[in-house]
Length: 299
Image 1: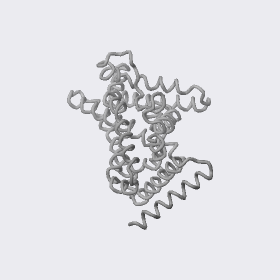
Image 2 (image 1 turned 45 degrees about the horizontal axis):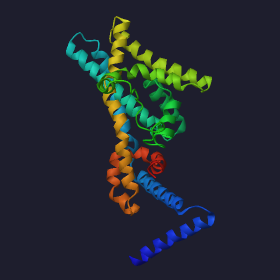
Image 3 (image 1 turned 90 degrees about the vertical axis):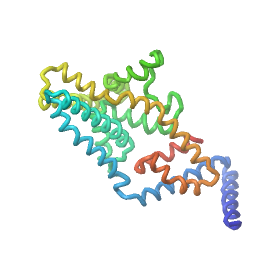
């Protein structure tokens, strides 16, 4: 035990001396060592994990959500109120899973190891299903949110800021307008992008909205445009209130967990003790891409 401690002390001393000789402060060496150590452990967990753990679970959930859509459209054509409400519920659940879980995984490139397929899935989930810009979504989530967690104006978790509204309206009524606001925000984020990117985003958003409208008219049997549009609004806004609440508060817990995790005196021992907890908090498929922003945001 003494020899191990002595070796560790010698290793750190040598590293600090090397940093001093190269003009770098010891704190930077310590941060880089923590980052390299955590990265190595995350890569080890990734290699030891099966395909089912890395992607199978998430793909199964997304597949189940898509399989809910056919019965949802058919039930929405029923004249019985109970079946109609069940169809509305199924469509709302499917939309929430696809647009929240699907877009998040796609923004991290966690649905495929291929960059080509990763780009395809990001456009499909973020633009067609989520009615938002893929480029703006990925930049805002990966480059800003994860890199500047809880930094107001950069990486704070809340994308919902309407301070002039009363509290109850802000939390429980205004979020119902998220389906209407999202495409408008996407248009604002398209400024400065290439003409091709703007045209593609507008086309994909229009394709996603029109596809749902067409299915409601031709499969569900809606006879009026107003009824189909109202059904689209209800299904897309069904889980917007809990989404906004999670969006506001969830990152606070994550940053606190990371701070206590990284600041432990014995990093290696802490990692192995908390590995199961860590995997419950973060999906294994996202750990590798989140490790650097986590460390920089907590130091």
